Image (cartoon, rainbow, N blue to C red; front, side, top):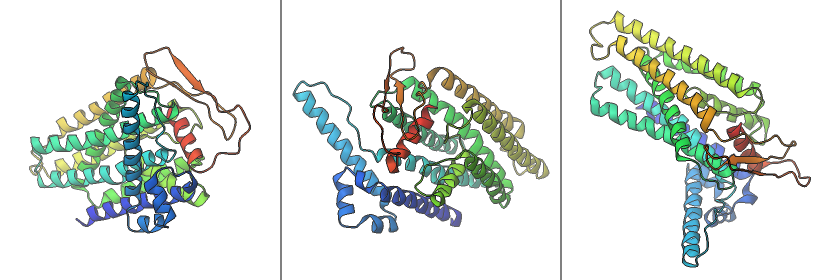
Length: 364
């Protein structure tokens, strides 16, 4: 219970800090009435202090979604073809916050709950289905980020459902073995999971630092972002930089995670044989090949996605600018390019810079 409360509070504080930082450097770009009201009456900081800042963003999303629905109804009545409306520049921050929440709260909770179930030997079919549903919800959240980045980068171009489903599938197939291996290791060596997390997480943070990320407004806050990315990488892949070859980076990451997962399963198997009889419900000769098989299948589906279904890469642009390009369907030959380099502009800052970086990293 103490660990669960720590995860909930820690994730909430992390989200509020990010939300407040991103509000503070983009307050002039707020477009929704509910957020403007909070800013006008100096309520942004109290809301975040009381852990309500993210809910303010949810209220802004509800407002823009409602306005978009009314806009569609009005166009339908007037016989006007509906055009995609922008939901506001702060949508980039909202998508990133949801991604951080998924891997700072939902995935650790799932790992903790699964480890307790394994310790008590209460793993049943209905329990397994609930765990699978939770993992699917996490992968679906990642797929929504994928879809949101595509819509943002392509200025409203709809995403192919096939592309989204394949993206969801490879994330699910890689998250399940990772979380299960961590839970199995935690169930037999609970005190060592903290040491494992800290050692691997610090290594991943250093790798993020080597990518020279530039997502926050100050170097100090940039380290907080790198720490959050390291947390995401502890469970799943997330591209944060165009530096270096994407194929090489993903190959190194997948190899490292595969090696670490096998190490965790090896320690669990060792403890199972040491205390034979207590774990008769889980046969290592079935569990380990199944998890490794799912991981390999997930890698293959991931390769298929990036080879045939991932949107095409945008062309490079001058520093401080971005060319956004996307395909409306992975199987279609029609494409369009948004060129934003017609006139000299000031270096991108705040949410504009973050949005440009997130979209560029997604398509890279």
